[in-house]
Picture 1 (cartoon, rainbow, N blue to C red):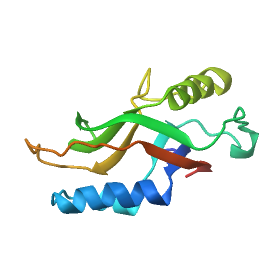
Picture 2 (cartoon, rainbow, N blue to C red):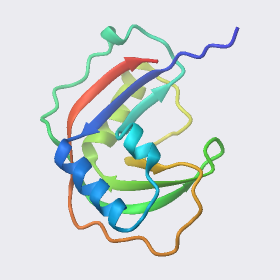
Picture 3 (cartoon, one colour):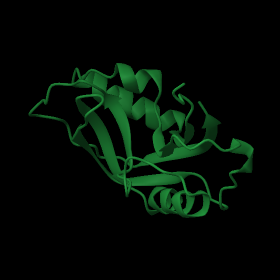
Length: 145
């Protein structure tokens, strides 16, 4: 039997950030079903199963602030071309590194590119708007899915 469970740790944008992103997407007619379903930034997503209550995160002052947000296309094997909002966050990068080292989580990636998925299986659009605001993340969720 194939293991379908995963360990997922993610941070969620606050309501104001979600509204700002949604308004920007809506103004420019950018598809965003995936963003509407589940707006988050994955910190770690791993096939390794451990009791999620055993995962202790270091003390983190919330909100986590994402700087230099911009649209980007990721070319993935699983979801085709994916439109994301990529941003800078040393906290997200440090958490990813901490979780890989402390709990030996295996992942598809050696490093993280912090982002929020907007739409999977997307055609590349040549003109995307500029993002002129920071992203605020006010919750961290740990789950076994």
